[in-house]
Figure 1 (cartoon, rainbow, N blue to C red):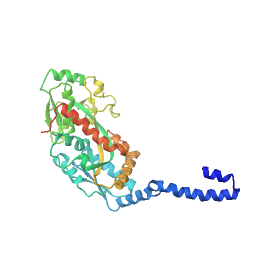
Figure 2 (cartoon, rainbow, N blue to C red):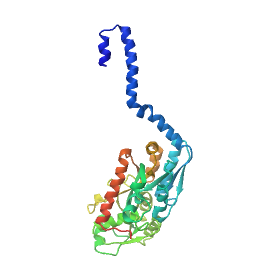
Figure 3 (cartoon, rainbow, N blue to C red):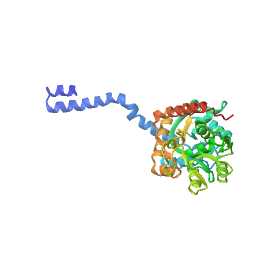
Figure 4 (cartoon, one colour):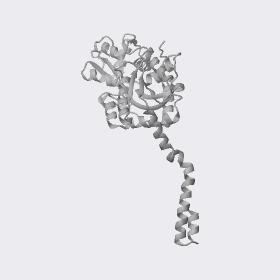
Length: 350
């Protein structure tokens, strides 16, 4: 700007105009050296990467069976992702070994963005803490593409258990050490780990009863054969609303909008707990940065989609919005946080 003003003092108007035009063009060329990677080059590159992703169907691996929470979320993602990309996005269930089979498969897939994993905190966090010989490492073998949804859990009791709050339960259980039971979807599941952490932090002695899946455990508590259970709010609110079980507390720090009358664990005054079961999208660690960035943009668009958010909320959850530069740190912090609690209270899957 100084150069143009300097010449304006000593040249006529036409000369100044011609000089300004020439200098402006030179300035754009010089500025272009700095901005081409982000403005002049990155946008076409991102478009070409996205076009490359459309070269063949994208498959989303779900490391559990059809009908579970992770599967349902994965199918919501696939539907919205396919609509936004105008492309074929498929869900492929690969259950087995407590989600290790499908997760290992996704970790070893060709890192080109066409094979992704929708997984939960249980697989990406709890398993690595509880099991010594997993065939995958969440931080080493995967890169986060986006965190999608989080679901609070509901602590429920059989309908005829004579307690109506967490404070009631604490008093009742302490008077009957070792007599009450809590069910779960299996050893090492979120229901098991969170139940053990909560009850041990309250100084309670309860017997853990593992089942082959959350649905089976839920049927047992509805039938009155076990006393307590932590279960995903999306599933537990239905029997709770019908009076077939009692809702004692919500695991998250905020009350669930779908069951606003149910207090959080923290509000009980007898324990502290902060837990939501989150779902995220992951790609193999060797996936090129440009491909990861393109996928992150697509997943961000999925999470912002109003219809997608409505489906997640209708299922009892909330959408997540973690910026790309914070996603790996979020995963690391979750592993450190739950690892410290599991060690503190001696929870084990073996």
